[in-house]
Length: 297
Image (cartoon, rainbow, N blue to C red):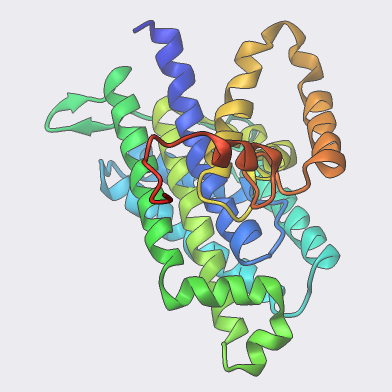
C-alpha cells in the first residue's frame, strides 16, 4: 500500500478515537465541550516528555498520556457541576486556550518550537512504521469502540444517558450527577489523551498550534456529522472529515468554511446526524433487505 495512503489512514484512525472519546461527553452525557483538543494536546505532550526526556517506551508512554489527560479531564469536570450549556461551552473554550498558552510559553515544553525527535513506537525491537503503525492505531480504535459499547450497557452508561435527558429527574431517582459527570470527563479526556499519544508517536513532533480551538471544532463537527449519541456515527464522521483535507487539498484554505456549511446543513435537514436515531440514512438502511426469511405466512 502506498506510504502516503497509509499515513492518511493512520491519522483518520487517530481522529476516530478522538471523535469516539468526545461522543462520550456530548452524545451520551450531554456535556458540550469545545475544548477537547486541549486533552489531545496534553496526551501528545506527555508522550513527548516521557519518551524524549525520560526515555520511557511503549506501552508506558501511552498509559501515562491517558492517565494525565484523564486526571486533567476530571478537573475540567468540576466546573461542569456548577455551569451548564452555554456557560460550559465557554468554560471549555477557555481551557483550550489556556492549555495551548501553557504549551506556547513553557520553556520546558519547548515553547513555540515544540518538542521534536519523538521516536516511533517499538514493539519487540521492531519500529512500528507505516503498516505497523496502522495496525497499532486501528487496534486501539477497535479496543476503544468495544470498551465504549460495553460501558454503555453498564449502570454507569444508564446514568450518563439519564443525565443527558434530564439532570433533575436523574438526581431525583438517586443518580449521583456529580460523580457521573466527573468520571465521564475523566474517561472522555483519557481517550483524547490516547489519541494524542498516537499522534505524537506518528508525527514525531508536537507544536502548540496543533491543539487549538480549530481542532476542537473539527472533532465536534465529526461527532455531530456522524450522529452524537450513536456508536457508529462518530466513526463515520471522523472518516469523512478526517480524510476531507486530503480529498479536497485543492481547496484547503476553504476547509473550515465547508465544515461550517456541513453543520448548517445538518441543523436544517438532519439534526440527529447521518446515523442519528431518526436520520434519513438510518431509515434507509433499515429498509435494505437482510436476506433473512420472514416468518410471516
